[in-house]
Amino acid sequence: MTTLVKPLTERQYQTFSVLVISHQTETQMQLQQALSGHVSRLDTVTTPESMMHSSQLLALYDLIIFDTRACQQHELNHIVSFFEGEILLILSENELKSEIVQGRYYLLYPMTDHQIQQAAKCALQRLIETQKYTALAQDLQKYHQTTIVGASEKTKQLKQQIKQYASSKAPVLIEGEAGTGKELAARAIHEASGRVGPFVVVNCSKLSSDSATAELLCNHGGSLRLANHGTLFLDGAENISADFQHILVQLLEGRTIQSVSGNSSYLIDVRLISASTKGMLNAVMENTFSRELYERLSVLKMNISPLRERPADLRELFPYLTGRLCNKLSLPVPEWQNEYDFEQGTYEWPGNIREVRNLIERCLLLNKSPNDYWQEYMLQQSRHASKVVIAVSHHSEIPEFQTIGTSSRRGYPSDWSLRETEKAHIQQVVDFFDGNKSAAARQLGISRKTLDRKYKE
Image: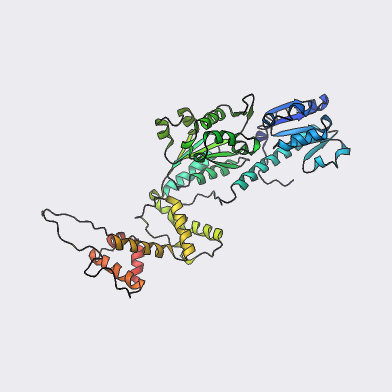
């Protein structure tokens, strides 16, 4: 078999639960002997009758080892129809050509303990692969990255935190403004952790109390079961409903989840990473979030700084995002890929990295460099409003002044080209500030470097 995800370690193998269906006492004993200590739970029943009409009971298990001598064909088909885990068959040689064998792992009599262990491992490995690629299929339209780009001190500290947190199983709480890359950091932690299961995202703000519980507990198709042996990312964790909070406390306490009926529970191996934009402690203070759950989710904490506090990251971030977007949009890489100087040091990027990405995508589609796009935009803004700083001396009268861009004739001649208009406006602003190009650049909404380049042109 071709392994599509990392092979299971012995310790990871021990987190699965197995059900044996066989009426042969000797077979039951051999399977118990071979798998005891290798899985977290191993139960046996003599016939499938007690399991045939209970999807809740079957949901307790990741693997069913099925002795075909213990049941009729229709009984096996019935269980297969609603069990979403893996099935390992025990066959006699005359059953090898049966339809039930197709696509399934199997064992033949007589079998050794080593053969049982290897077959079980292969079946569980495929279960993890199925979960992982189901998660990828659900999120197919999003092209994810796990690379943290930037060389500022704050970004270096973030990368170091990711390395430190990855080796732990403790829950992580990531806080930061919208667009700073909280999900990106969570994915980076998951990738560096070596967990064999998938990274599954749950948008807490889109789940009502009832739907959240049902969605997370529906057998192997639910987000919680899908994330088994992987990572569950709770986006917008401050919006978690009361019912959902209770489930998570139960999960964090005993690594178990109660069945829908409440009569049984099953073990689950999921690492929780939560993200909040508003700040979880505020929700606790407002009594909308359980303090107990907050303390459990925030064993490890991470705060991602906004882009305005790490503008040096634009030097690497801008060409990196340009290259990714060109690949996504099937466009050639533009010559302006490394023009990252626009508004550097003056604009605060309230939308953070998301705003940078949106600007680059807009420029790619318009076939216009960000410097030119930004300059035209700011030129339009300056026509509607001007900002003037006045220093008032000890005199009681405020000196008269003429607002930038105003005269007896409003605007520039209609027959001027955009280049002529731009040149005249830049010169007018520089003259107004008595040749102080730094002040003029701030007024124009461009960097000093861009202003110097415009002068050379």
